[in-house]
Image (spheres, rainbow, N blue to C red):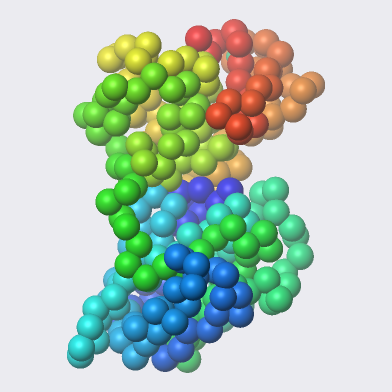
Length: 261
Ligand SMILES: [Zn+2]
């Protein structure tokens, strides 16, 4: 958390600020700038105007244009970063994060006209970067096609869960969405990528799109059908099997041993 859906929720209200001039960049936490020590370079886009607000996977991109230069600021939100516009957040509270709302956790503040855009991040694993390397990210999960997924899977043998979380392969899925996709598609998180057949790949691509659309409509990555099953006492709502918990690729993974093969 936050995953692709939450970043899209951050992006939408920022569109209203397009056309505003960036009058100030404050970094209450200089370590939030990437690469380390790059805090001064961010000032390059001051006095330019916001021209577009884009998103690739979990990376939010603010494009700027001025008389002398263009520049893109990239925001990453880590595990607990929330975006606020004039102290109002598109998301009040992130799952698994503190319910407190402390301005001392503001890592960066951007002033556009009369508005202040802040990133409030208790665990400070997010970052701000000038000209982030977008090409390092894989295909955006929101609109992924079978062909996109098939190409991303080529030559890989990692467990499916690790593959879905690999942002260089597919950009945007986090822990909850990956588990929901695999649960809905009936694929084990441990299955090696190269053992997933073409018909299953087709179903997986459709399931990724469906999960994102559904959960966006329901209000977040934690609104999946399998989310209430992330519990040792839970049984699968499809077949009654006891849910299993494993660590795959270092991440806590819940899955059903009966229908996920
Ligand atoms: Zn099941």
